[in-house]
Length: 242
Image (tube, rainbow, N blue to C red; front, top):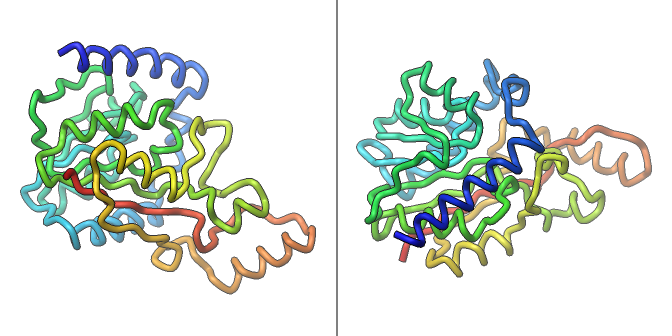
């Protein structure tokens, strides 16, 4: 019980810092609304996850659920999904859609894990204490349950090594700089076995290989270009509770 209270207290203090500094409000989520590329991205990622777990009938936690777009896609596949977020606006939007969601610090964690899958999509870079979060996720999964860290920036990429930035990494919002190495290590020290990972550039709806390579070359030549998709920029990882 003491351990659980400790996690809750950390969640409260972290939430106060994050919300005060970053303000994940309505303005933050506006680009997500009516964005067909994002929906296609959710569909492709869930199809990949179903290589490891049948979502139909599975109990899923969307940790950092935002306004519930991914949750809706999971429900369409027959998953029993619950969401949590630090944003009061996001949680209220989920509830308006009839989705089950709560603020992170209000979750009634189970004494014994009962989720089949926990998803952190585009979340890892926003975690002040990744090990606390991942350890807590471990406790909430059934034996053999899966954790999926999706759409996560990868600072081991050629793009980041050369330019010190990534299109998916807003440094004014990030408190952790993720990479394949740090994600693998975080999962493994918290009892997970990494069973699969990928760099989903070619599967992405945002990829335009010839155009992206050209922009990369132009940027190497010193010409200004806006951030763009590129191989290795983003990583997806799946771990299993041992």
